Image 1 (tube, rainbow, N blue to C red):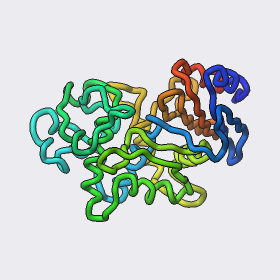
Image 2 (tube, rainbow, N blue to C red):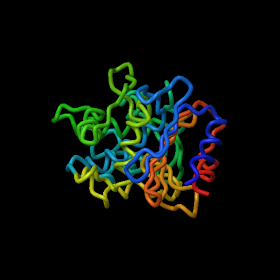
Image 3 (tube, helix red, strand yellow):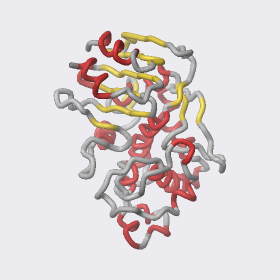
Image 4 (cartoon, helix red, strand yellow):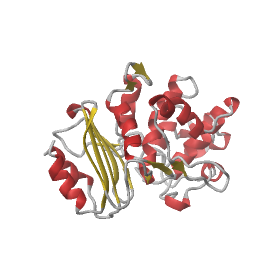
Amino acid sequence: MNVEAAFAYAERHALQALVVEQAGAIAFEWYGGGYDPQKPHALYSGTKSFWGVAAIAAEEDGLLRVDEPVSLTLPAWEHGDRARVTLRDLLQLTAGIGFGGLGNTVPTFERAAAVELKDPPGERFTYGGIPLQVFGAVLARKLAPSGLSPNAYLRERLLDPIGLRVGAWRKLNDGNEPLPTGAFLAAREWLKFGVLVRDRGAWGDRAIVAPASLARCFIGSAANPRYGAGWWLSPLSQVPDLVYASGSGGQAMYVIPSAGAVVVKYGASASYKHDAFLKRLLG
């Protein structure tokens, strides 16, 4: 990997942190713009990367099936096109829900669950936060007997076992933490989640999720072959196993199993391009 060339590109685009882990060791680490190894940074939509993995963990725990219909849990979805929407459609942003629910406009679970579809399920990829909040409404009901919220389940099931400390998580007016955005993590903390993904669901000698289950997060849809369950898939044909999480302003976590690497990059630039960074890093 050519970390120097990738760093030079990112530095021209308001870089705030860049950490590269390879073969179990930190190979490169840089901070700027007021950030340091301890200061959490907003992930924005990079937060979405948690929920595909949480969904397959919940499936392993017998809480749900990723391909089950939303209507199995939300009776209001039993009629019309909404009856055909699955949890996978929500996670892949192909449920037919219109654009919206980003940033400060994320609706509560209740309001998201009341949304009507704009397109037939499965036909169109539409980026936004509402589908993840509908998934949150489903998961909240599945978890109700345990007393856990979706975010508490995420922490207990995935984050605590790998020692990942969340700096903060924004709350909505109803007190719930949103699923599609809102997490603040120091760079090395987010890196831990990337290591879990790179190592096929294992943390050291402990299996957190099964490799075959995890792999289902990285399968694109017919509507968008380059987007899995909360993760973007490789833009580089020569590195097909690359996957990455992406957030507004150039937040990114790149997981590159063939290089044994995980890269976390924070910034504050609308002009930053993932493919430009990756071509310099891996070209």
